[in-house]
Amino acid sequence: MKREKGIFITIEGIEGCGKSTQAKMLGKYLGKKGLDVILTREPGGTEIGNQIRKILLDRKNKKILAVTELLLYAASRAQHVNEVIAPELAEGKIVVCDRFSDATTAYQGYGRGLDKKMISVLDKFSTGGLVPDLTIILDLPEKVGLERAKRRNREMGISRGEGRIEEEGLVFHRKVRRGYLKIAKDDQKRVKVINALRSMEEINAEICKEADKLIKRNFQ
Image 1 (cartoon, rainbow, N blue to C red):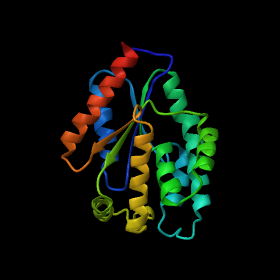
Image 2 (spheres, one colour):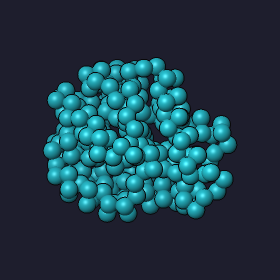
Image 3 (cartoon, rainbow, N blue to C red):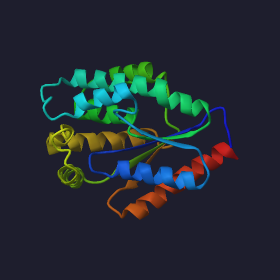
Image 4 (tube, rainbow, N blue to C red):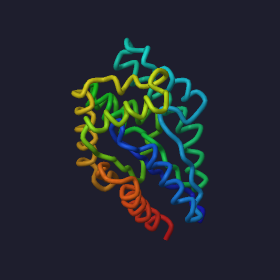
């Protein structure tokens, strides 16, 4: 089932929407079908990217400027695309990524208020114009997501090392959510919005259905 170009699927959404869990569940589902799947995430995905991730998510870095934040995400993504995503796609594999370019548009564009055209130009430069074949946005009220994220951080003991974004106010997260929904509205062919208030199994079933449609179009 080799192709010259693989399939690129991204999972997006506000904090606490369950995207990391759903990315893993999708990867497991596709793997059981005998497909060659690579799971990765942003920021991170590479040794350099993981070092940048620590800077971006560390609660101590409260003075980080919005433009610095943007450039660090772009730097991590450039390394990620060149070192991991593009090579795996070239081998015909399915790459499932927890966050990608849409996160930057939602968080730094809509959330921080940075110029979206500038973000688009920077993103094309850092990714070489790579666009996902399918993007799933897990949507739920920002208050619910934020409460889930903070509870998760406490339970996992990562609230000290990470958690900087979760400390932003509700207004910021509301802007991010609206940004994601605007992205989906503007690109309905690529982006699918899924209600993340349901059970993990119900959400997973809908994501897998969308992935199956994409795979069928590409492999048959």
